Image (cartoon, rainbow, N blue to C red):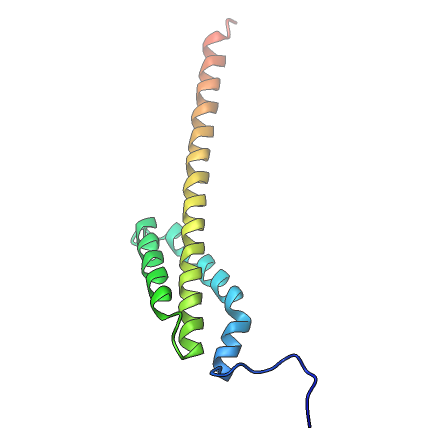
Length: 120
């Protein structure tokens, strides 16, 4: 019996590997979100820790992307992608933090100017 289905199973794939492949983007996004929140609320984990983990993740992915095990390839992809997304999140949080600080300073200066120029 010949199947006309386009869902052929790749050689060397496993059930766990296919499961990870189907969910790898969602997993990477959730891991990056949780890691960004940990960095935001923790004083022990810094942006430099996230950047170092991203470098390690990319190096690990580059070293393991030709692995025969699909599970290893998918786990390394999820690790590298989540770390790179966390770096983006940390950098955006840093930009927003400094933008808020700048806005507070600008409003304080405008308030002082208004107070000093008020001649009543």
